[in-house]
Image (cartoon, rainbow, N blue to C red):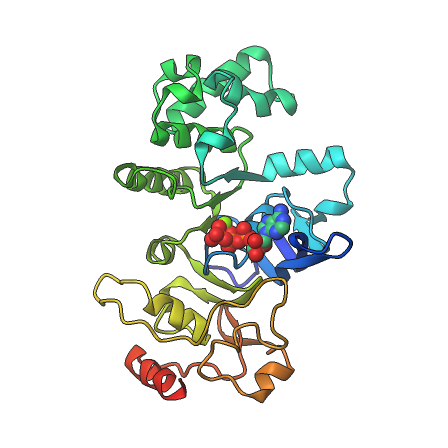
Amino acid sequence: MSAVARPSLVTLGDVHVVHKARSGGFFQRDKVYALTGADLSVAPGETVGVVGESGCGKSTLARVLVGLQKPTAGSVTVDGEDLWRMAAGRRRTAIGRHVGMVFQDPSTALNRRLPVRQILRDPLDVHRIGTVRERDERVRELLDLVGLPASVADVLPGQVSGGQRQRIAIARALALRPRLLVADEPTSALDVSVRAQILNLLLDLRTQLGLAMVFVSHDIQTVRRMSDRVVTMYLGRIVETAPAADVPAGARHPYTRALFSATPGLLSPIDPIPLAGPVPSATRPPTGCPFRTRCWKASDECAAELPPVTEAGPGHLFRCHHPVPNDATDRELISQAQERS
Ligand SMILES: Nc1ncnc2c1ncn2[C@@H]1O[C@H](COP(=O)(O)OP(=O)(O)OP(=O)(O)O)[C@@H](O)[C@H]1O
Ligand SMILES: [Mg+2]
């Protein structure tokens, strides 16, 4: 590895996404803080895994990365240029060239009325890539790339299995040869029996095409195994980014440790670090550290001030006033948490 920093494919700078809630009064609807102050860079060829409980903002982060969600504030830089300062046409071109996205449910992500050939040709038509003949050739190539027979081109998405539909969705995401693929729960809507096949396909494609990947999943052990870096989110905030090899034992944020302790590892049984109370509402996030209402280490300082970003080592950042010591075992953390409650 050279000492020169690699230029990033996509960089988020202090990105905020605030939605209007469906709750609240007619005149004053509540605000939902879906993503708050997110800083993240994805380098060519690297895989970044995103973990965190339901509603913490993983899909919002994914949608911001691929330009589907415009931030309320902050910047999205693609190949050195601010995406949301570009004219709409240039933005579409930049997004098409650089990023592809695979969603959770391929049944709703694909137009049910179009034959697969048309679904795969669509991005090429929209971006006017190649001649008609070359587009047809590319469709065959894409089907081959995702392990589907050429005959699939003539069927409708509803006529193939869920796993095959997800292969079609992956092929479409790759149509414009993006350098980054963002996959949001790509296997969770599929039968358990085909999940591993789709995961393996993504891993093969990553190697074969040299893709960078952002991978979102509730299956955090799988995320850890297939990623170079693991991003932990809590209530709209990135609270830790760590080399996957250091997770979970070397994680410094109490929430990362708690999250991983609640899922079975290969060798360890489930032995969760107990947390206090429920996840606060995203319409009223706590002051200071978002995790402090559930954290066994929380002090007055945590309520008063958002912890600054601390660097634990190369590629390892966290936000916590009372980080977990490097060598702490789950056992020790469990008894600390039990004492507090
Ligand atoms: N269009 C919207 N309008 C209002 N609130 C929204 C909207 N989209 C997302 N939210 C809210 O923003 C927060 C973050 O949602 P997001 O879908 O990013 O979470 P997630 O981590 O992907 O959850 P899950 O694991 O369940 O997929 C949640 O509180 C969610 O209810
Ligand atoms: Mg989601």
